[in-house]
Image (cartoon, rainbow, N blue to C red; front, side, top):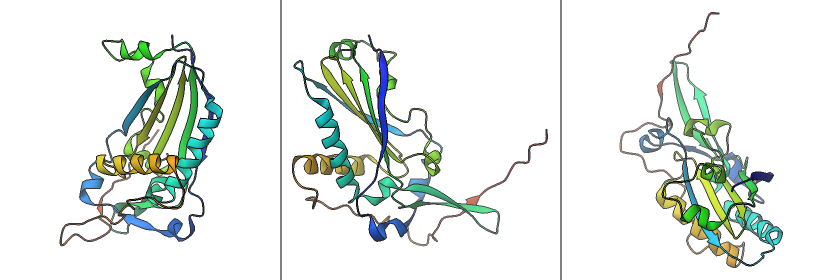
Length: 219
């Protein structure tokens, strides 16, 4: 059971990002509250008992993901920390097209029934997700969105990890639906374009600053 191994990892960027790479999005109080928490993880389990040519499907998935990211520039960005002169810092989202992570893995001795037939999540299940253990504030150096496709003996598990500072449940559903739409058709448009502006309460100055203290460690 399991015999998990990673076949490849790659960085998926949006094509022709253009001016979007200069865009800075200030984070709202609602966004900032999720900085100390872990990333959100979702997944789909597919059963296909017959042999499937996964290499073609993997390539198509990566191309569709790249096209979808062109409409969602924040998802290929990184968090940026700015230090201010009054001993405060602010955290913003830089749409620099640094890319999303894509992992292709295989667990050839694991079948769909090993997952569905378990009363509790099997111990190997965590390996089917990318960026395990990454905290949202680590989005300064880690991708804000990561996908993993894990081949099973009779199926496929498609999972993704998303930084909750950048994506909530609604934006996640919107992105997945847009990705599916692109996968079935064209890269040139999606039926529902995203709204990238954050809504701030009245009277909130941007960027939001909060106290920061540097600790001096003496050996």
